[in-house]
Length: 381
Ligand SMILES: *Cc1c(COP(=O)(O)O)cnc(C)c1O
Image (cartoon, rainbow, N blue to C red; front, top):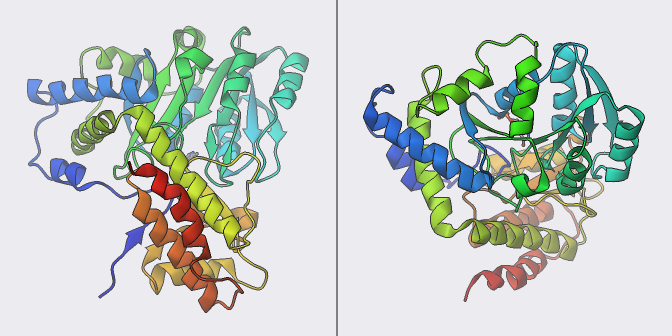
């Protein structure tokens, strides 16, 4: 027998409490019983998103909320600025182009964060730009972008700050109302510790103004319609009812831990992952502005990264993510978001050490674990 561990940056493990809640017999979604659950989840979502704005609950993966954040606020021909420093940044621009928007791109080296000075320069030169589209945590390159600084640039312009927070909300402190982030999207299968299938979007009043004149075609992802229904504790179409029942459980768990502590835990795990890899002499993909959700690490010279990740998964039972596009085979990613804690990191680091040894890399087993332990022990009184 082999025990399996899911330590990928989405989907992430689902806590037993949510699994049990979701296993309950189906109830009808147009009932006071379901509406009460929906209402509670919608309220708690505001707490986790750190916002007074409505947070829409959509039945889709995270990309659905990204697409909705374009089609509901812009018209063909509108100009937007996409920060392209990885797979997901690229996606913002691709969605916009599909709907006939004119996309200005800032290309960022994979592993680097965008500089807010570069964003300012493009905004100053192109006052017609209606939105900056960015990731808070670019999961593909394990980079954190400077959202507070970018939001400060859009705040006093007729420009929206639209952020993909799919591996950031519920991970790191992002006071979006205070910073002036207009739209923040997320999804269920990352820090929300649920199966895939729900997406969320928090929308500011400034953004709703844009919605009034936006002519991009849309039907299913009609945010104004969803907002109206949210006000009646329901959704426009059949909600993913079981997932929403699970969502309420998860949000209660986050509330019980306390958002502050949730952020501290993620920060501690991220620091432990980095310290462990550095202690082993491994090279980090994003040392300058690392993501709080996942840590990218180059495989040593002579090790085939794709085979390495496959070995950890199939032979050792530990699923981590490899690299995408040109980083395929060159990196692996340690995830530390969602339902993960101290000893999940020990498993991840120990697995890496043993697999590296199997692949002939000259590392000293235990060195990474020891470095991580020195940080992880902070989590105990
Ligand atoms: C996972 C992820 C997405 C994509 O979400 P899907 O749920 O696969 O549509 C988008 N952005 C980021 C930053 C992600 O990590």
